[in-house]
Length: 408
Length: 82
Image (cartoon, rainbow over all chains, first blue to last red; front, side, top):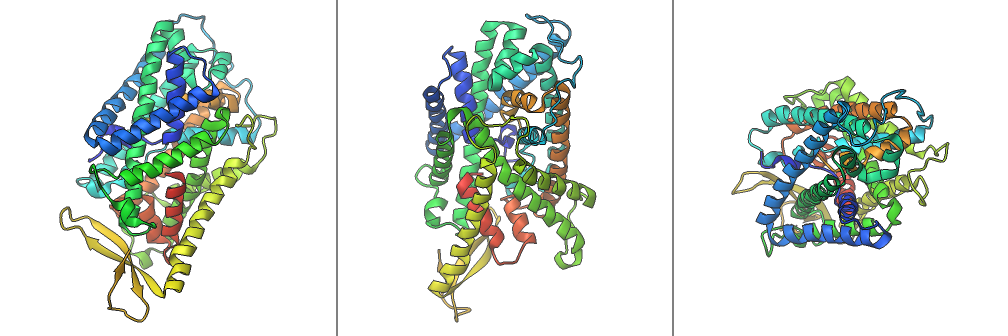
């Protein structure tokens, strides 16, 4: 595969920058405040943008190295979790597994929001699909790598959760928030290890920012190459440092805006939700698309080498429909995910983003062609060097079906 | 696939679910949904082995109105950087 393991990392540059800021400030013994957290987060994402925009080779090396750091940290948590279960703790046993269901919420808002955060942690199973043309023997690789990666991650995540519960009392888990891993290290290994390992968690968050901005920059570049964006050539360009500087910048800009706009206490959760909510909408349509293919097989001549099967597609569709509808149910017991923002804000912003895409389509594919008297046509070509299939849009003046074609 | 979620979200998940048992159960439930999603993406990925992921799948299935899937996806990418 073209991508290293760390390149399969999802997440989003903005939220990972927030995590970076909190862990690095914690390691430096600085009280996390409104502006220092934002400042460190901004420095984090800006560094990632500059490295990938100007020194691609070093960016990739660093990104791959930090991918291993992340895996190492996770393994340390899992292994010391086993030790904690065996009694190797610097604090009294928290007894979190006795009466494990005491205090269970009755609020469907709580359950659905928690489920969002869990799915967010697992997401990335589709990331390998972005670079399939660059993968050798994609069908075989994908069929083997995807289940293996998800299975391995699922086991590590469950064990990491058990490790946290084995070492950190419930009240402390709730009060530590996003720096839970730091509390875990303190309870198992003491305060010195806590600060050192916090630096490594921060570094792995930085590695995540690097890999996200790397792949998102390329997705934007690809849209430019297909001639879909305004100023497509600008976004498609690989100049001056053989990296998609414009695409990287676009992602940097959006990340910074979403990171700085909400109040700091709510920033992380808002970013997480405002990204994962539209993703649930997209996934509902992807699942619906597969169900549609199953029921209209002849029309599409759809015979792939792997079958998800209809029940699985229906289950994935239903799950995503639930994830789209359920967040509109107001929190019943005052447990809102936000401190100050209204609980429904990410749903409304999420739908507004989808609607924004609709407006873009209306202007790009309906209104502008009408004004300019042309027809939008998608052409498929094969790259002379690497042989990849590539489509791009051309404007064909109406009335000349074979005439001169103006490229975007 | 190792994002920073596993370091940053377990506390929030415990807070929202109220109990250790439900929090662990939700981690399992999320994994099952992710596995179903993986199977769906695996079928599309092996059937349409091109660069670009879900954009290709939506364009392949939803052909009408013309280019609507492309336009919606473009807005989504540019506005969210996703």
